[in-house]
Length: 252
Image (cartoon, rainbow, N blue to C red; front, side):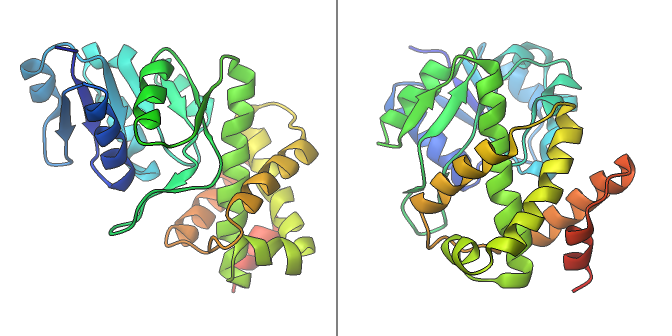
């Protein structure tokens, strides 16, 4: 029998990945928020991988408390993810930029293929393939960072701009392009600060637009939009960054 997969956080995406791993022959052990990770680690055989599928706000608490024998097995799937999120915990996880959506009572909806990087990329790719979810293994760490920022551009720009415009991502670029570009300027400043590198803004915009075209009817303003805006402004204020468009949106 294959070694087990641990899934910490059984929301919609965590459940999709669990199903994929089951289809490829791995036993899956779920860990919910009211369960003790150390007790699970003591009672379950050495895992093949540990998927951390909690929300962005819960990520660092999990990484701070993850059992020692799980640290080298982690797979991270969060939005707004960047290398400093795991480097500050001295971790080297497998990461995936999730470009499929799963809502309660609905089937999986794919926007573009999901890139995966890290030592567990192959088993994660096989699990997604078993569910007919397109994906791509990325071997270059810098390219994977670009992919993570691409997703951050998409999710932050559409969510934050959507607090003012509403509508879909297709509407945003067709009807509010100038405003969206102002939001992108602020988002880019935050991403560059967090990464401590200069980004190719135009390349990232073009990559983001490929995702817009992948699902032009996707709504801009998700339920997490206010929290994303609050986090972005908090990062900017602590770093002394100028983000005038985000501030104006926050005052609406």
